[in-house]
Amino acid sequence: MSQHSALSTQHSRVETLRWRGGRLELIDQRLLPGRVEYLACSSAAEVARAIREMAIRGAPAIGCAAACGVALEAARLQRAPPSEFAAGLDQAFAALAASRPTAVNLFWALERMRAALQAVEPAEPAAMAARLLDEAHRILAEDVAANRAMGANGAALLEDGMRVLTHCNAGALATAGHGTALGVIRSAVAAGKQLSVVVDETRPFLQGARLTAWELAQDGIPVTLITDGMSGHLMGRGEIDAVVVGADRVAANGDVANKIGTYMIAVLARRHGIPFYVAAPLSTIDPRLASGDAIPIEEREASEVRGYGGVEWAPAGVAVRNPVFDVTPADLVTALITEKGVVPAPDRGKIAALLR
Ligand code: MRU
Image (cartoon, protein in one colour):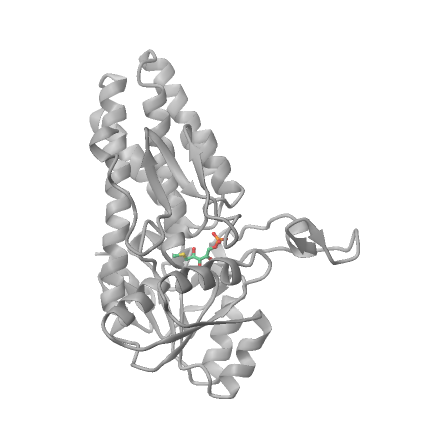
């Protein structure tokens, strides 16, 4: 891995994934904002666990981590006999694919890695491992480039002085660098626009309060934290000028799966005549799913809703639902911001054209 050891994802002040000494290191996002600590992974199983347990999260970041997980496993097995190498990699692909269901970037990245492998087969395991490592680095570099392009495209939609609402974390922490929704905000600020960001705390996992508020503060971008139920009130008072969120999966008709609570914000934004923008790279678009109804929605443990960080405030044993994503119908989306351009009022035809 020496040729790539200097490659990192540092494009804001936040370095989400990096290679160190042949291992993949991830900021352990469960510890933020209290501690910035890296979790080192040496195998696909360790990366799958880091994804499942939310040490790393955010659609593009999950895809990047999964690609690195395959590369790590290949490096680990490169001196094994070819049959053992092939079986080990099959297991690695399966474990990573089972880590989380909603963000399509995970499956997109695994398909890229599978195609890279098939392109060199049959070959010595060491040669295949080298090819997979290259592909993983390419995926990370392309993600950063896509975010920068998306940032440039989306920045034009934000005007000087705007107060922008965002939900969850779609920043550097959720990508290989720069971010999707926060990338648009970062690029607009870099272009000289003064923006302030209102961030929902994002119950139950608190990605807004713990991650977005921290990430924006690192960059010196003004941020105000609210609870999830406050955004309608602020919109009604004329205190929000635009909404920008990321996405975990965009269906062929433009429906958008994103963090639970996004749908409510989109409805409120429409009610108040506020533009609702979704920033997502092409790797987040799933043309195989006709509409948002077909997007698998992850449900996580009840304990996440009963409390946080080991403290439970709900009555023991109370019934809980915990779907962690929702689907915003395409007709509520003012524009989809991608690295290829901005798509106003996305629909099936425009999404198909974008992917051509
Ligand atoms: O459960 P998470 O934290 O992985 O959910 C993340 C989101 O919903 C983000 O908004 C989405 O992945 C876009 S990230 C660029």
